[in-house]
Image (cartoon, rainbow, N blue to C red; front, top):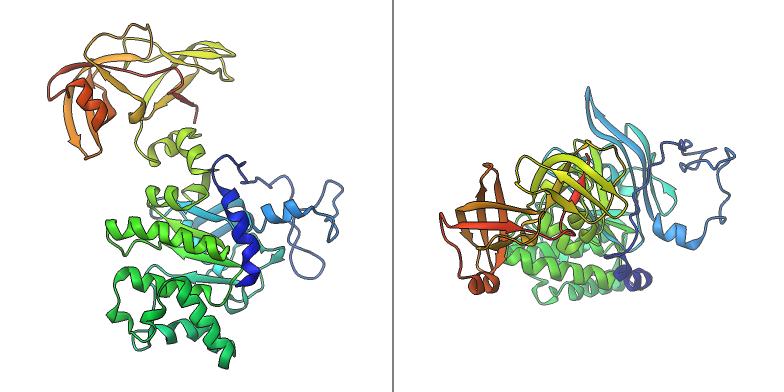
Length: 421
């Protein structure tokens, strides 16, 4: 596993604060792979860059490249022109609801589905004509797919034996990988004698022992209950950090993606809607879909009535006051927009707010106590229901409002995000 050490050292750089690497390459058509073509976009003069002319940083940031990929099943287009780059050593998540195309994209990376058009490259190599067993990838399936009649040790060794690895090297690699996932003492047990979390570690060891360039995870936590899943998420990230393998995971669980991945691509109807760090995607959604899909939010529809470089005012029928956001946008007055405000950014008060904007009046319609916080459903005078998330400490200091209490909701000028799509 020594060849993975450098990637392990750089994995930490894939987290929040780094630029979005999703790319749109339709303006630079890809050249065919195979003889006479490298499967990478042509330069501005129509020629492909010669080998060695790209900077090391470019290669690191484009270790996995998905270039204008389409996948069709008869008349159904499951994946629509996806362009994406994944860094070397990065843990990247494809996030979306069932049927959005994320698993199809993962299966194309593994070679289990063919690409209708476009290119997939790993470390500069076009995979178009490469069969699954030749690809530098390994896939950990949702069901783990362990051989029930084999021991843990034999399950992990199976792939290496298929490649002709024998003797001391086989024993050394299997033992080292089981040590990595803390399963060496269970080497002689059968899968039926293991817990769900332990079975998952064995499946991970079987995927890692072959030292793939790219590890593919298909809903890796879906078979675990919530408590085990939360603990295992951190354990899995720590293991992958030690190894440094580049990893792409598929999940429909927003919390799982935000906990584990350095960057996330949100998918809908076969397309990538937004790519960024968990912080970027959650705090700065680029569309109504992303704002609603990632966590909970309050959406206020309205029209721009004032637009300056440092702020905008929006009038909405949902509120008695104008909405004020402390940055400008590009668009005409009267343009319809939606303001997204997360529940944790909304404050509840019993007294009328002093400001002339970003507030509303209503009554408590429902209360959901979640332990560390309480989620209040406030029905405004306009009939719209607003969610306000108060920590248990804040709720205690407020003398927690209860059902049918009159309250005011308010939020700061920096709390709102303007959505135009």
